[in-house]
Image 1 (cartoon, rainbow, N blue to C red):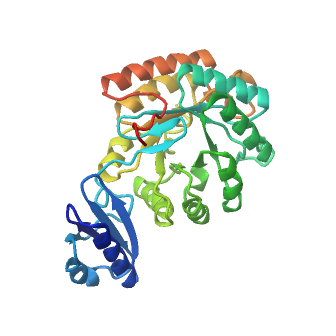
Image 2: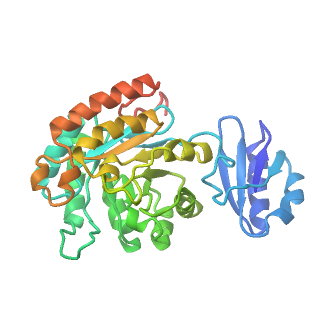
Image 3: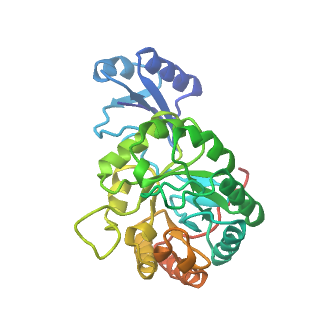
Length: 346
């Protein structure tokens, strides 16, 4: 349930109700909005405490949360969440553009790509240092050396770094070097990993599993939120269907559906969603038109020689063309692709 505080409720009243919720054996998630504060009371046997909480000082009403996902729902937080870290922002009017190679292969390859995508207008750099691969014989990434290369690219270009973490034990290491920690599609329901990310405090990009429903994606996000990390982005990267013309089926109807039900930003991955470089730009533009808060795009200096996913990676020239198309669409939608710039005085 959610405890909706009155407009103008004092800090002491809010703190009192947080303590009251926790004294009942429930977990309190205070969410501070521009007009009022709500406190999500999460746990079993919530309904029996409703009348007790309604009589608290400064309380306007207590409302049951109907969605199976609690902290991720619009019922708890009507305002859209905006994620900001370094050069990157996603949510509200901001469209975040994450671009870079599938895998960090070398310092030269990564730095060259970082310079090119920044020049084209990207607001964050992606690159896999740890690569979960279907075959154990495929390139598995440079691991910590790859993280150091990404950090060097951030140092030179100023781009925030987005990279995947594949095990709970790796979260502190990856968190030391990266700005946004990505959960790959294979790990969407790795609950120990999700809980570890909830305790890390860095923004998380959570990819939808190839056979997962949207409710399952939101419940996976709930693990991270419930552990205490409010900065989660949902990523639509396509699902498995009977179609074979693309690598996956990129279901863009999920973008407005998620926005109706959750306050979390939605990022789209047209690289994995299509698996064909020629389809990435049109689907990127369509994603922004559908309301996506950001895109994650694979870009490589020489896709033909890429160690992973070269067939869906764009050249530098193709990415620059994609950015021009996306800016046009974003402008028509009243949104902007620009580096994160905090409000004056913050």
